[in-house]
Image 1 (spheres, rainbow, N blue to C red):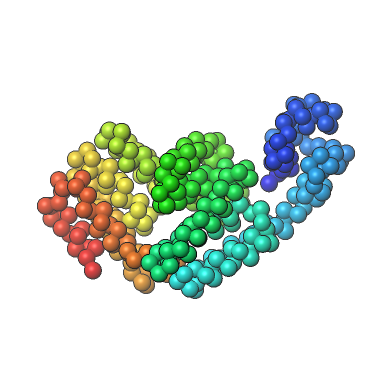
Image 2: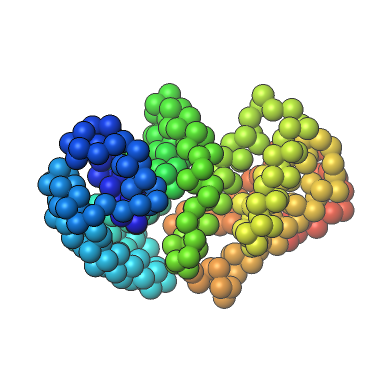
Length: 337
């Protein structure tokens, strides 16, 4: 984070306007704006005054402390990555790492966001054996996300947090409450900060690209299933999805292809419907191969595997117009166990 970004973040966190800050420092609001845009930088005396106003040290303001935080954050993320492949089925080892990380760096909203996602994911392990524990994990996930949305100022993290909140609240029956977060998500996902993210740091760039694509994919999938959209509009959205996948070289997940097949089926385009269903079946088969790179890198606690999910999607009446074709029969054979 640049000095300008830090000044803006601290000013907003304390609910101080640019005009108020300018008055406290006896400068113009335009000067504050130039600092926050990193066009100019405050001199040494202004740095001391800013630290006093914000109630922080000059090191914190200048980002000196953030260097260590960034390194510790990276350490925990790398540790999480290494632990996923050897983790116990219930995610206990992963959850323990998250708790250690947030004890050390409690304001790391990216780790908090990831933790909330994994809490929800691992809660499915207790769906049958311990429903109370599953609900407690879901409640903790929601609490973390609500904290992020009231404290974090990073639009990329906020977008994903709104998406998660919408999904989690729907999952526990709070659908009316969930609607507002879908609205927030829609608004923030189209913001300039989310679309034009910072590049240069390879790890950060990869993370932001993944999150951006995931959010846009989620948003477009919702639009695809909007019954108010005409078949023609749904195909237009499907084209946007395909462009997104191609732009970021995404492949190998059946969840990328089933929304496309569903959209094309709505217009009666048998060729493209079957083409995407076949891609979904191929991806699901690869994902379920225990020796595949995908299977070794992902933990699945759901009783359904990827072929089950594709098989369930194929029962949609939308595919009736291609159900008797040899190609559809071949797709069913591909996902048969």
